[in-house]
Image 1 (cartoon, rainbow, N blue to C red):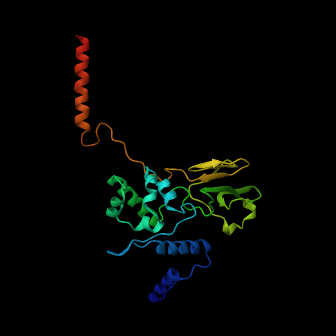
Image 2: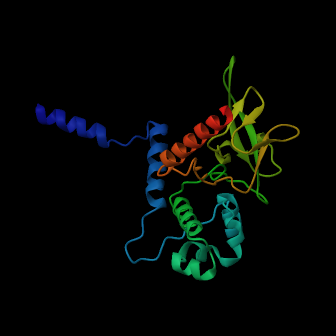
Image 3: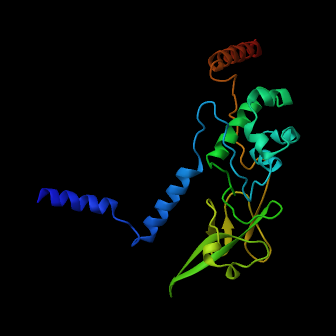
Length: 236
């Protein structure tokens, strides 16, 4: 009897989940993700990820990550070169200072891993511009669901099959007809658009206040001494 219960439990774990489309879709997504990025073995050539509709070339990528890396676009003649050049080779090409090389290489790794910024999952982009619209689904006579979708250029949301619409992350419907999200610009006639903008994916640097953590106490102590000295001189 006990062995039968164990077999039944194992059957539940490994039973195909075709009856539940949500679970099936989730498993497929995880399977695709598992094959999207594999760290390169030591000594192996670095992986070169494919371009995306929102990031079709080197200049667009450097524009998005900001920190004035766009000025180095001419240093990388191809997409493959951008992802295969070592730090030493970048230095020889004139990618300076070192902190910019470190930042660039870190952002390249993020792109390899599929860690994009706003608009990175868009499917329909033309000349650096993507169109967003609102897909309405009537759930009940008294309830209508609204989702933000990416539609092909020149198309209305009703003209595109639902399975071909893309739902970008980070964007939602505000009220009944407005679209809110990073860098979403309203469009006349309804909907919104996203344009490639310099620094959209930039990782902002922290600001050092009073000399940073190591010197804060010293700098602030000297400031208080100077303030007390100035106060005494005013009283004399």
